[in-house]
Length: 199
Ligand SMILES: [Ca+2]
Image (cartoon, rainbow, N blue to C red; front, side):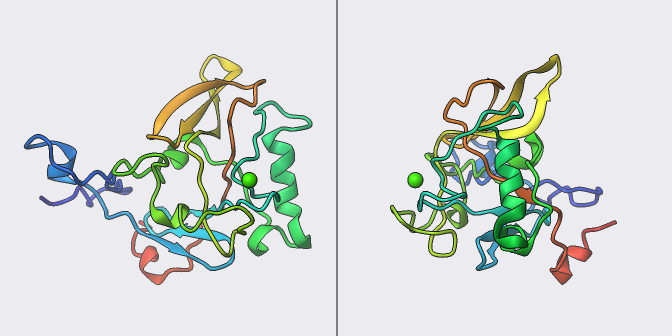
């Protein structure tokens, strides 16, 4: 089965590898192989999209997996948190000051539909234990993460992704729910092979 890689932006595999019915996703497994690299500085790069992602910790700090935020601007919002991330250590988290909130398609791109609770690659779920930092572990909660994408009818609702199983849901922007956040930096095209994907 050849993947549809002739287009400008090939999609990645879902991550599902179990075959239940001939012709199902686990059988066909269309798309590019999921491929991530831990950069060792608290960030992860997706080799398919070039997007750099924040790792989460369980150390009670700025990147703690259990922090939750409202979508609406103001105190306790993800926007206020994002400003802290971009100012962290004077240079921004991981030496980058262009962190932003991912849109809903970007956020879905790191879901691994072959896993659940949480539905992520082990690069986002390894050695998570109380006190661990972004350089010693990688944490993800099985709850909702906000995207920056507001609802089509206005910002009373915004889209989030539930990383228990990869569900996309619209959440009330004034409510923190269990909404955590994971930010993404501008594309990191430092990998030579990625340049081949830019058309
Ligand atoms: Ca925690």
